[in-house]
Length: 80
Length: 381
Image 1: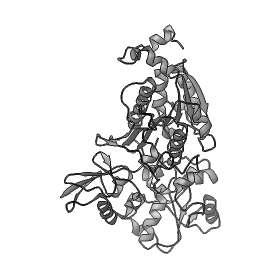
Image 2: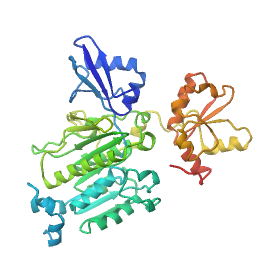
Image 3: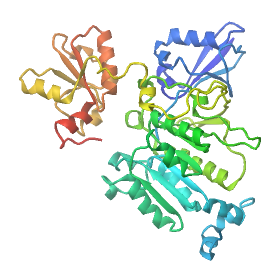
Image 4: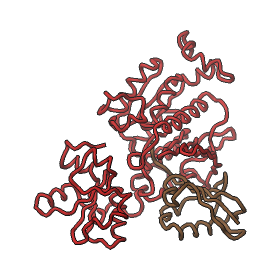
């Protein structure tokens, strides 16, 4: 099934754009998607401790994804 | 407390708003707001809060106005370059609204002074430009029970939330540590000076902070407490996420472990600090090598438009072109890499190491350090 990865801040640089489509097997959890992303984009390691959001909610790694979910990576930004 | 005839006229356009009235105006007049940082976010906050008639506005900023600020910090004028931000801001704002009292702090907010300073205000606006200050302001607001208007900007993107707001049920809304429990390594957090920032975006996010602050102080509407707004002005997309209070939050959770302000620089620097960076070269050391007649190959990885402002006779190959121009770099010479502040040069060194280059040194602090230690006449930006 298809899910979308949405990146903000420095994460955009790492995945080379604001979003990314991913084909994953059904019933995968967010923690597994995190591992796949880390292996495809090793530079995400620095953001590994970030909590990920799915659609509008921050979720824990055991959250199970469904078709068309958006997994959102939001790093802190410091500018003012 | 009452409102004079002049005040009734000055604030007429908000007093006539449904739900606002003279009651709302009197609440603003009795309020004290501290703005941390008189920069891109601080400027619109200061202007709108002063215009709206906040009784006391505190301005804390230790920095001076630079030419690079004016693209977005439209409170300042070109003739103000080199002057103290906090003092100039107060002088301009006094002209905007003589009814408001200003408190100027021409110093850096720190763990030593934050409790005293923030303790004197009802609400705090975070317009700072670095992560240690953001955690510091957050923790102080949690310890003192003050609502905090959070805003942060990067390139074309902004983040906004209301932290630590007292809700009607007596509970406090989420805070910065609920959103970001631990800071990522410093190289993952880019400042405006390294990453750039869109000018009007600072105005948008700053004005939204002021809007939320005025609502909270006047007791109006619904706020962004418990939510995070993400705004990407590049593609004009917004997203509002729900934030949860984290029961493991070390300052506000069920079993707190931090009860007073900590060393935030160390907290944000990650596990390895204090030791000087391996492969780092100070400006003085580089000057020494040059004067000794053994100059290294000096590689300047800034963009061409930066090189045109000022350079120290390095070979200019921008970081973005390094990969494709790698053959231009001698492999049998010791190499010193520099940029503006030392961040990009570090990335360049990692790239060169991957390509098999040896004898690499990073000019610590970049051109800024060189200007400070060796050549004050160098034009920095």
